[in-house]
Length: 457
Image (tube, rainbow, N blue to C red; front, side, top):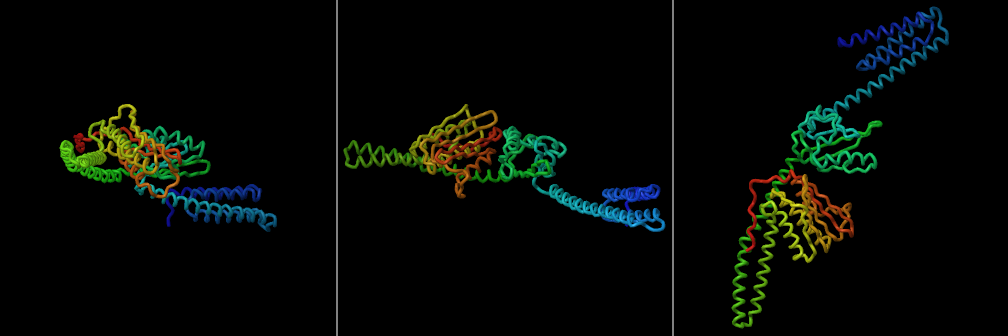
């Protein structure tokens, strides 16, 4: 197999260098000292690919050492000289073995790097590597597709360029706390966060972060997956469910509710007539009238629960106030609603999901937490809307889970599909706090919204 033309000068140069050492050995009677310079020739074969060049120059330098010895001692070679040359040859072939071992390790490393690079280039997940200061060191093609940046645009920049608020503001503090305390909040734990594309748009993504120690350096590798499509499908499923709820609520209000209202008016009129006539069953008829009114009110409560939020911007505020009033009446607990600043939610879907989260939190506080006092707080800021439900119930240990709690999963589900996050804090005997935070960007008005329930007649 012919040698590549660019390698020929290297082979010639190493051959000439080995020959120069032979000439120097012949000219200077310094024995093995000069011949040990041949080790440098072996070491320089590190720059030549494959085992062949190292073994070949090992044989060449061995021959030159033998030739040098023959030129120095024409007649007989003293035992001491033979021992020195033996040590030189041992040194030469030790160098050959070391170089061959290094080349094997290096080849295995190159193959491993090639496989890793192939995975990085072909995986559908974005893979991003950052250093201990948060600066991006690698950015694969999938990450380019997900975030819209070319790798050259972000390598060397802080990874928070890929994060929207509030993650952008929290990132440096999190890294600093981790280096100081070693407390992990994301590392080794998959979680859902929000990313920011080059065009400024945000999207939900799954994030898994691992830590890698390379000598005295620490690197963090993040694997990200755009889950926008999954969230869109989940949102459609919940919207279909909400639409069915609305239909049932509308039927309750317009159908059963109106019928009960009519029956109530008839029974009220009949009870009044029986009372005027002094009929012995007048009291029974009055009692029937009261039960019909209670049934009518119950049907209306169910209707408003199924269609909680009016399309007006302040519909969520009124719905939460109604929720607190119904909790007092139905569960016999102290439940209050408080609005911090004026909270206007223009997107009816967002408002409905926030209401459902509050509804589930109140229900859990009563049924599972045995709470006596519940507070619902709705607050607005420049960048966020926050809903919080506090109770003084029995609480629970968040670290202990028996796999149940479908209501909690559904609350988390609802928070995610409207672009928010749900946080639940609780301690046994110290109540529970459920907090849902959504960015203002999630509250985008929609052109069409389902009709609200007509006002109570």
